[in-house]
Length: 345
Image 1: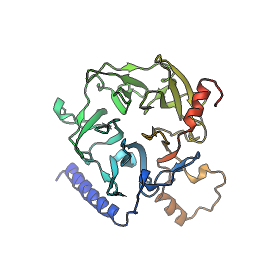
Image 2 (image 1 turned 30 degrees about the vertical axis):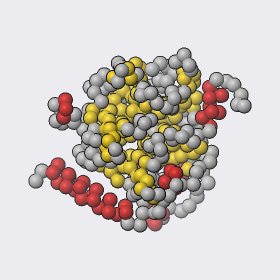
Image 3 (image 1 turned 180 degrees about the vertical axis):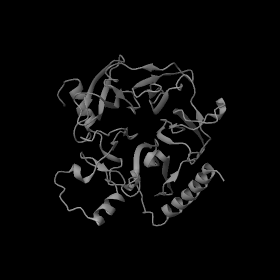
Image 4 (image 1 turned 135 degrees about the horizontal axis):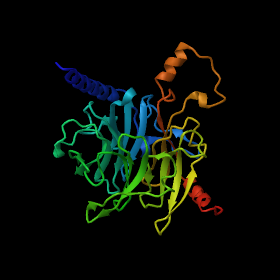
């Protein structure tokens, strides 16, 4: 039996075990956003013990009706990297499960985004595109799966002109279907934000956005407002950063010019500089973002290191892996005034 075959069997066993365990003792969650108490103006962990468990966790997408939540987890080295989802059945949230067609451990599945009508799920994967004759995979492309009734159908590669032999990732869509995404130079590290308009049901040739959106040495994983009023861009290489990569917001004008960028500030950006994934809920109420934080980031944290403490920290969020935080999204309007240099009302 080959190593790959053994790995596939192990993955199937682990999936079954995790799904069985997740249902045992899963909390009784009702209400919006997994029944979590709404946050204020200070970032909080989102759904600790359910979404944030201590595993490397990032990326979030919520259905337009708010009854499905998708998020990503991975083991170290991006092993077993996949998208999980939880949904409301009756009036209760279900234990997280792997999204259909995303359980092959040989490949990774990341960065979900749901279209405004809830009928399409876009995501990143390096799985092979069998429809194009690819049998090995490895190229990072944007994929999409469509919903029939309540069932997701088999995904397909979005294809040209969006996908190329470079890496394309982090899809984010406007309400009218315009696709924003990242393209990373082949065999390099530099990356930029691109946009592809949808014309007569077909994606047009992508355009690389200008220097206000692409304002650093590298930028990636941008979230576009559904009404295309602003874009939030994790950017590296700017002089006004709190760490290395920070979140910046750029506002779009009616004439398709952009104003900004404005740093989202120290409440959100950390000195660790590992802020890589932002999202605003479909109702516009909450801002979600990925960040890597530990208790030592709080200067008041003064406890003695012990074996018991290390075990506790390792098994919980704040262990050095990334987590998803959330807060009220009202600060975005304040940043708009800052971008346009006008006082808030």
